[in-house]
Amino acid sequence: MKLFKEYIFPRLILDLFPFYPMLMIFGIYSVDLHVDLNVIIGIFICYLILVIAFVYNDIADREADAPIKYAPHSFLNHLKSNLGLYKSKEGRRFRNIFCNESRNVFYGYIFLIVAVSLVLFLSLIFIGPLNLLLSIVMIFFAFAYSGTFFTLKKYAGFDLITHAFLLATSEIFFFWTFEESEIKIYSWIILIGATLYSVGGDLDNEYRDFDDDQGANLKNTAHFLGKTLTKQISVLCVILGIAFTVVGMVYRFVTMGSVY
Image (cartoon, rainbow, N blue to C red; front, side, top):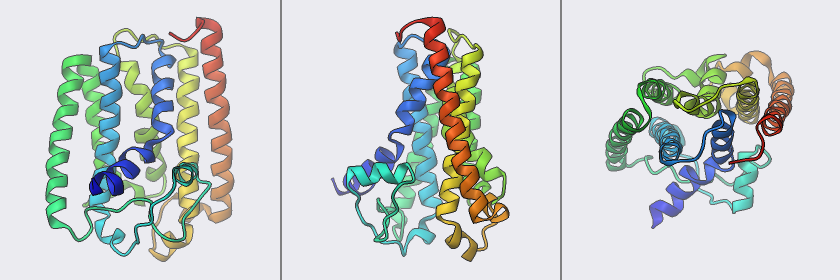
């Protein structure tokens, strides 16, 4: 119960709200898929890949996270935090269970092995080879983003690319690999919108953590843009992302009719 309350619920459920459900909707309706068993399994696969990314990130960051105090957020503050509207001065919204817990780290790696195997199995059996290939690429970025030997989020440009691809672009593109998918102009508009929004979200995170990252000598994109320009580009990307996504969804509903 403590594990669920302090880690699973805040980290692996609330941290994905509301972006994950919205991405699933955008992905499915951008290519006019009917919701059937395969689509439901696809939704689960996307969720599992995000969980893999989050769990591995927490394992990789366990030493850096060790001094950070656990300070549970209310649901509203957690949502505001996800939207970049709130930052607690008391501590982190979840407890990194891998800090100072070698046994948990071992169990974490076992979970990752099982989760990756399940993703690959479900992708191949229920969706197809193309989806399996995309799942492999998504898993690669899930590990490379927070890797132990090399970490893409520490390098300018790669931080934005990997964040946007893993947390937005691939989640929508995932449903484009279904045989029944119909890729049209509005599909690309929605994809561009979600990607831009994710880039803006990552830049906002780098703006929020700018002083800490500078102290750690982190050479991410914000380091080269500067704090003010990082914020300005972040806001621009978010606005453009919302605009593109809304236009794409409206275009889809106008040309294709109501939601299935």
